[in-house]
View (cartoon, rainbow, N blue to C red):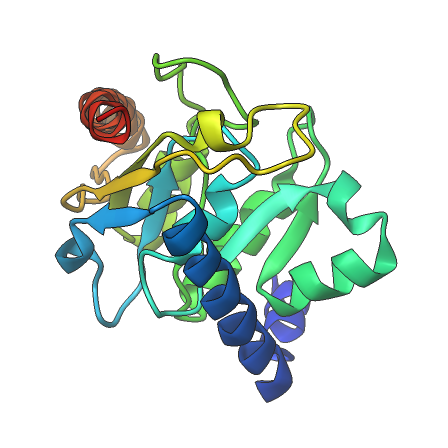
Length: 225
């Protein structure tokens, strides 16, 4: 963990400049091209740590998520995006770090915990890889596990319309309306014993799933107007 934290601490001022520059460009594009609107920004803490937990229907969801707050956030990404050295360098400067899809990546969990312990907010898609359709799929327990280890609240985010703007396999971003809803924070699960912690995490995952489904329904409805 010390090695990971040292690596995280090595982020330069230049990385922050790149992040905010890229964020500003992609957010402006989403606002103009996709008529993106974000409701619920008041739920994003102005300081302190948190886990942003968005729904995931499009490759656009990562840049869309960056538009919900001016705070610099960190996020995991599929390692394939780092195979291109130029793109990988940009993603790293923007706070990303690669994970191997389909594996139980303990190193990724450690990195996520290190990010939060260093005071940086984290983006974590609880459904895992991109899904399709209006139904929120079963959630992985990574978000609640990391929350229980760090005390970070989980903030649900529903993104409506991104799949129509850029579905899987698309090479072009269509000018489709995107609506984003940021929900109220869900407290990190706690318990005095390991059994109580596991049960609290299970319940928190259920609460997160229900909240995301309710919010996604509304976000899709607004995007379809």
